[in-house]
Amino acid sequence: MKNIQELIRLTESMSASADLRSRKKNDNKTGKLYRAILRYSEADEDEIVRKVYGKKADASLPAYRKLKTRLRNILVDILLDTGASDKPNYTNYVETYRSLQRQYASAQVLISKRAYQNSARILEKVYRIALDNSMTELLYQSSQLLAGIYLGMIANNRKFEFYTQAAAKHRQEFVDLGLATECYYHFKSLLYNRTLPMEEIGKIATDKAAEMSEVFERNHNLHNIAIKYHDLICFGHYLSGNFEASFKYAVAAEQHLLELVDKTSRKLYPSRLMQLRSLGFLNRVVEGEELLNRLFEDTQIYSVDWINLVEEELLFFVRCKKYQKAFDAAIKIDRRRLRNKLSNENKQIWEVIDATIYLLIICGRIELPATDNRFRNFRVIRFLNSVPTYSKEKWGMNVQILAIHTMLLILQKKYDQVIDRVEALEKYCSRHLRNNERLRGNCFIKMLTSVVKGNFHKVAAERNASKYVKRLQGTQSSNLDQAANIEIIPYEILWEMLLENLDQKIHIVRVRTQSSA
Image (cartoon, rainbow, N blue to C red):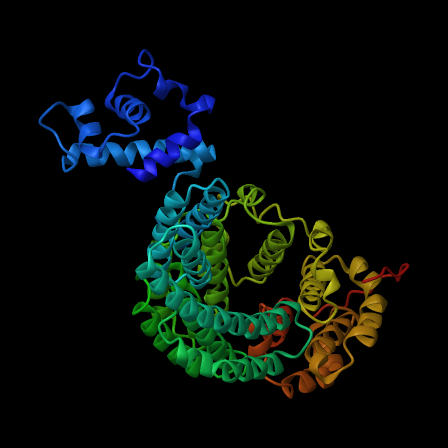
């Protein structure tokens, strides 16, 4: 009852509570209870109940307890001006976290208004739900604030001791989470920016996992630390080309996390995604398809997560050389609906994907349905301008983009445009692809320029490119570049497809002014 009396005192002068105060506008039991508490402030709770439910009722009446809860929620909403869109939502981890953060902020507002009873009530609810979901930050914040309330604002020594001990425990967890996050983000920044060779980034992932191993052992049951640790271990194997180990460890990681979270939780996604990626390189198609079915079952169609999963599905089938199934994945996406779902940068990967699918179509690796208009109307001329972000990756994805664009021009027999690009492509190699780590891109660009120098004749192209082909075959496996999406299709396969589509005729084209790559 003290909680509601406190809220009535704070909201009494607010216009939003006018309907509760008016008998004419609110004559239901909620209004009656509000007015009884307001009028009989010195009465005990049983007396208040009898004013609403009659002479035989008392405070143990179930209907009264529900009514009291409803009134308290209405008054909190009035005090905090909470609309319907801000109602608590505990359907998943993200919504639960958002709801608890809002409630934590509300509790702070209540403290500033000296509504200590209601603030403590909200914070204890935050603490309970955060504990169920292992939300380390909220556990530390709410327990620390509750310890302060029960020390100096509400005299309750038992609760003060409990939350003081809880705050000390969660503080250590919070510090450990900070260390784990620092290790994880350091690795992720290298992975996203791709400033080092993939194998070296994989070694850093392993080193960072070792650095946080003690934190993981100390917090074995905290999923937000376990996820980061497992992901680092998985990437350490994956980016080193040890796909069997990355798959096995990802399965073990999922089993551990299933002990900590619900089986449909998004927290399981990283380990399941690593399984799918590894299965692609291991060419285990059936297992990968079964896993994809599980992943799609837990993903809402046309959500951002669903779009990303379709991308992973497509890449899986490309790695398994199941190009027709990759095409089936690509056409799930309505490009018009991407505009409102993805950032400009994330939309550009679909420009590259479409160009890759179109290349596979004109090379005869994909059979195009008669009803398709998306790829039948693909415009090569606009492709390079549609991927400005990747053009900055001078030795990354941009090399494959230039390669695919040049191949498309050759296969469409636009030889004059190809010749225009030869000098620019060679300059690009000398400027950006000189280091050993970038040798594969260097070799393939020179293989393409050899086709031009051989006047697009198949035998001449093979002869002119032979030394670069040998050098490419002697480089490190392209799996690591595929793992980082630097090579969506390995250069060896692209070269094989190109040769299949060259003829035995010499095509001599006049040289025009060179363009820049």
